[in-house]
Image (cartoon, rainbow, N blue to C red; front, side):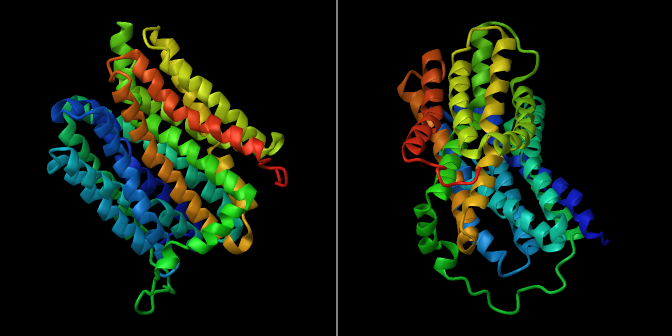
Length: 411
């Protein structure tokens, strides 16, 4: 079945939503696995971090391959890897070490679908239409992860944690089938023989050094790293925190913890889009600094809300989610605009790599601080854990403002 070029976007949005269904599986079952496998909070955080470790290992190769072959081929392999990772978690994982392996596979699968999916669109859509389609594609990341919380929570409550991973594995498998059946291969595939990819194609260290020497571009990259550290730590632990809040407050929440996490996640989509519009008016660097400081304040207030009414806890959670995401597209757009044209591709690769590096560190830092400050049964421990992940945004603002970040940048 053939579609006009614009018709590929709805299909890729659907495929992306399916591919992202495995994103929050572990966050939803974290508490259940912690009790069944007798995991420490650090171990629980490291399993969440393994997902981002797998992404970081795979994304440089995946993006380099899309310059050599049709991105559709990379996407199909990524969909199968993610499916295998989720099935492995549901059917084969039985302790900390096996969970690390299968979560890393799941992350590597996402690396093979997310950016290659964007490349599928850019290769098939006329340049005049492309920016609008890309905006929708990136916004759907939040929608896909929101559905991941919702679906995983429903399956957990009905069938148990094994079925969460096993059934959600149908998501990336469906993404694989959508692309295989409905997205045609490029008529002039770039693959004309052996794929010669050298190490410096995957890790262009020389170009990365030039990117980091650019004060503007490096500022957006470091900001994105602090942003993702806080974002993915929060997303990995929010379900467990809601469960703790329900016990501490002594009253039932309006919705289940997993459903709440999913609904709150959806607020990030308009926050990111609207945040970029505000940044165009007040200046990108100024907006990023305002957002990071506000997010830190709301994150600590959210952590301190245990024992309060559920409506206050949820309101603070929504506020924190909005301000975590309010600078997301601003940071990425700022990098694209400020990076020099001859190293823009390398800058975007480093941006993604360091961003998910923050995602790797965040959940582990959160779990480690929980362990050393009193475990997840202590309100003080939760406060310190949130402080440990929001403080990086504050430190980033202090450092970058001192070195004059944005003084020569376009707002």
